[in-house]
Image 1 (cartoon, rainbow, N blue to C red):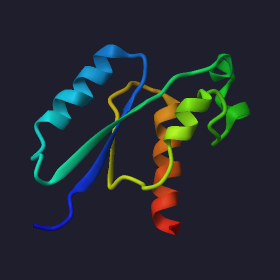
Image 2 (cartoon, one colour; image 1 turned 180 degrees about the vertical axis):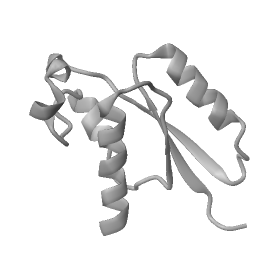
Image 3 (cartoon, rainbow, N blue to C red; image 1 turned 90 degrees about the vertical axis):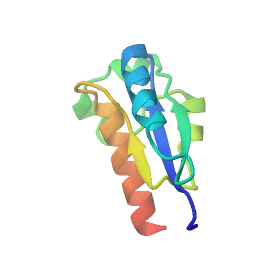
Image 4 (tube, rainbow, N blue to C red; image 1 turned 120 degrees about the vertical axis):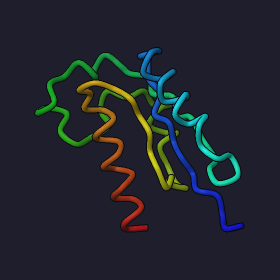
Length: 100
């Protein structure tokens, strides 16, 4: 069988959203996917407006930033409402995959 695909779950403090993402991931074929949960913790700077933070990771804890690194996943799963953090992280991961 070919190499397993890697799926990251972006898990923050929204327990309902995290539970939904875990439920979706549990339905995947474990012989085809390795599921890794990335815990996202926020700092006080996360309350800054989007136009100030722009497309950066300002507002994520040091540990959260450190966990977002290569090897990059094939898929990213997050279940949230309008949350710019997940979109920013997905764009960062996509760029890393394209240029690595």
